Length: 451
Image (cartoon, rainbow, N blue to C red; front, side, top):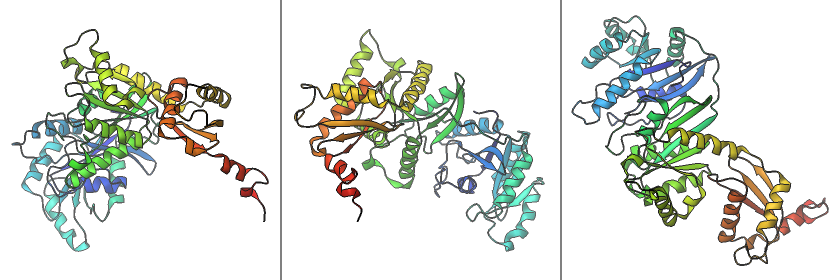
């Protein structure tokens, strides 16, 4: 957790509107909202700036979750540990009067000795203001009627929040690396997040689908600030049923898209699956650098050749795996966790690089030598190449005929550039411009003719 940024936590019963209030405050639909009780299981965090003051607002699980649930204990323990790290608590209640559990919850937050602001949700018109007297009987002096859905009184609530903060921070340092963790359900993503942070930020359970939202936080590593996101486990699209799974999948794709580097976690006990290939497709679609981390390495019987054999098997069943760094880890035992972070920082640094045009064209000239290209190699020509973008690197080839550059030819150039230009783990994009288009764009050519 980034200690210098104060944390404001929204707490309350299930279905009082915590996620709706959270989304309204941050002006994004980050927390999944659904009438289904107990939907939020982890603490969802987002850092905002209001009136030049920076703080992190968090959405927490409903603490009245049934204790008969197998997940209830870790969910409640995780939420309470988070509340102890909070600077201000927003206790969200529901119009017209406190429920029985609200009184229990009020006692719980009082014992934390934190500033508490009571917000009474679903106060949608002035006629409901008379109900506020019911809430003053709980003994809190700071009570604000709000409507999370209609954004009523949110500015007043935010004003009260910044007034209650023990310290005011007016700026935030951008992270040196944005990292997301993706993988199948139960591959160990939440355990890896907790290992990075050094405490239980995310609920860990053997039950598949425990994580539904994308959970993000920040930490420091070797004087670098890293923002990490633990995502919901991705299943095959054909197996996604209902809004909850759909929104979980959408949040995961969004996390991939805003990352600098993606860690694709593979369960060593299960091996590479078709779902993992689908996950890789999503990463490739977003054109993001990726590191493959083979998790639960502690549970595998190993010999001198075990890792190389598994790596070769993975590449044989999924040829794209050869393009990326592969590291064996144990998220639970923190085995090679530092190596994974060092690799992620190094991959981003290489992805940021700009290849000098003379060097790029020297490499292209070597790749065009007879005998190196796939079929049709003698016909196609690359007159000139230039890098036009970084992260991911995009190269533009000026060629004689774009139709000669078939899928296998493009794959040859992509793999060769990754190898020749030290771009392992980084997707390479090549744009083509044919000779006819070049001629149209020359001075006096058809495309530039003045009429």
